[in-house]
Image (cartoon, helix red, strand yellow):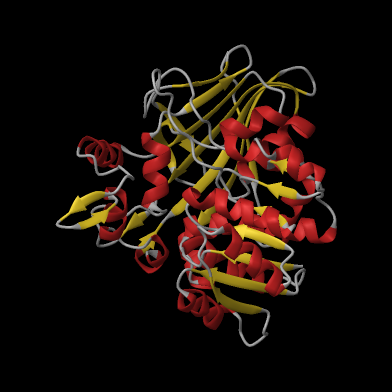
Length: 407
């Protein structure tokens, strides 16, 4: 297996130390628009093995991607950049005839007349529209294979196969008690992606209704997270699980809520009110620039926050319904990562490390034959036990918490 990691930022760089401890692949090429960025990853994590190398790549150019794949003998492409570049990388991998993985689906577009009721172009629509072509060529595009989406979807599949006879709701819930010293506002993940998923109309799926949308930050609830993180306010956010889980999991309803916090929500609302969330370039004294890119440039790089960050992050999936014994059941399957651990061992902050871990695991399963398939598939399409067992072998086990079902 020869892997091309497109993007050497936070997640791409965090992929390196995790993969460096495994032996299922022959080579990893870290590509970035700036080759020196990929080279810094190689210099930090290769440890003289020669299994890592760097390359310059324009990720917006499918032809450049396919040509690099052929030149390097690539078998698998991992997309580790902003979701606005999903389609050129997805297309380049298809043209090269290699396996594709990403951690975020192609972008959505709100409904032009009813944005807070009807979905327009949904997350992943552009990719799933090409599923038949991928399947016909016997190629696999494994989409949404980070932590959320990704591990959260694996949890849903595990619940269906091993814990429940009937599933009512699958509710992905994400929360953290992370603090960043010295910053009044410092998102732990790409602000470009954060704005996209938080300010777009969040989407919900119900069996009787299909997919529908709500206003941003709708239906707040308090969810208690484990490992001392405690109760946090969660709100609806647009996220890929709601588009993936219903395709393979038999349930009545799917939601995603994130513990953003009131201050974070206020900042996002202000950015939207001022038009600073816009992606279309505007003229600034003769220079065209995207307002959202300006916001991103003014904030600290999430990859560099590790030494100033403390606390834990939790990603998980709450499932309710009836257990295999027919009785009401509610469980929360989850994965907690402590920043002190990830930074101390791998010099990667917790959020990007937790995201990067899961595609490494998935690639190992593809390498050893535990996972295989063709078409555009989500993590739910694959047997879950091998993935969760391998997490333990990676030294980052998952957990399950039984909760009292609400009558």
